[in-house]
Image (cartoon, rainbow, N blue to C red):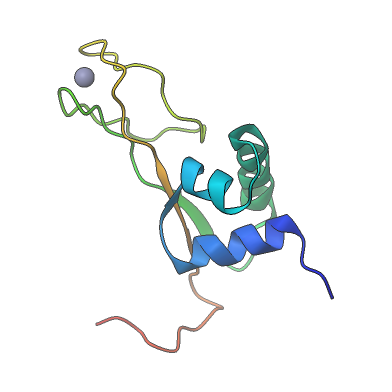
Length: 105
Ligand SMILES: [Zn+2]
């Protein structure tokens, strides 16, 4: 059975934090499409699994973009106007229902 790109995306996100660029390159898919996939995956998550987005950070002044609702990369820093923003990283975290074989201590 062939897996869809979204299923493969979920697998990749389970393995560790990935940026949009990482995912776009890995799946040879435009970032815009990856964003749509991530939104779709987030809506479809069940059993306490969460799609976690690491806070992007301004590389010039250290400003953190906390609690963002959107997955796209911020274009510029509201504090210093720099456009050097770190790419947000995504990670799929399973909670509850899905037991890990190697629980980290
Ligand atoms: Zn800044």
